[in-house]
Image 1: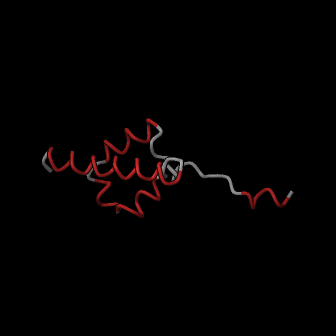
Image 2: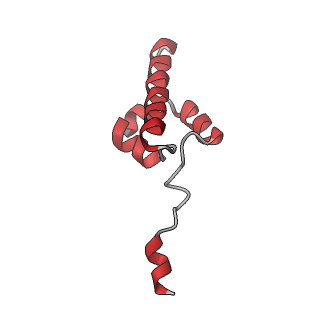
Image 3: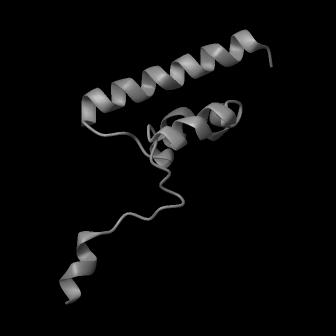
Length: 75
């Protein structure tokens, strides 16, 4: 893959994340990114994605489970 194509893909990912934050008020998780952009698309930019996860721009939902309110009802 040429550097130009990779940069275009990274630009599209950054634009998607920026728009997502403006619409929802929080960063997207990785599962949402895969659903909306496709896994194969993201695999081509994996070093960029890892950097975004490290900066906190993407929540890595497959690794870190989010607590659910339903769990508190059993107390």
